[in-house]
Image (cartoon, rainbow, N blue to C red; front, side, top):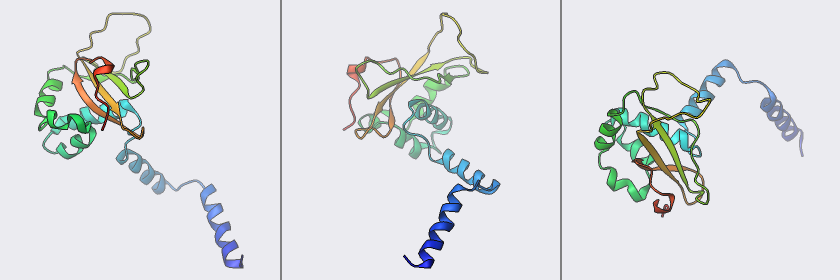
Amino acid sequence: MDRDDQGSRDYWGRLEKRLPTAEEAVVREAEELLTPDMESPVTVARLFMLGLEDVDENAVALGQLVAPQTRSAWGDFTDAKAYLDAIPDPGISTTPILPAGYPDVAYVKIFNNVGSGFIVEQEQMVIIPAVVTLCRSNDGTGWYVYRMGDQPAPDTVEPMS
């Protein structure tokens, strides 16, 4: 190894250990926002709900968030938007339901009237107006919206092809 290689290695090693500048931190944060965590069913459900706010502007993104086997059923997403708009002040749960024996299916509850966050500390009756059903990609690297509305049985959710 010549001196230049060693010097270069030392430089990059020191660079990795330093703290990012404020500008670099902002760029990293923006990249994280623009590169959603598709491995989180809650994140995918939230992005889908946000996309429904303007279906014309977000049609391409919405099409990429839904499972390919259900894509044609969504049409132009106006029915999904109308369905979500009928739920007053919707919000989603922060924890997905992962049915036992079905590792490729997840459910994310949509609650109504959640102007501000709340914590359920004891059993109580909560009306769930809708559920976002998601299925995992074949390679296990991401979740996709399969359906929104009633919660289907996990054995009826078609696997991704």
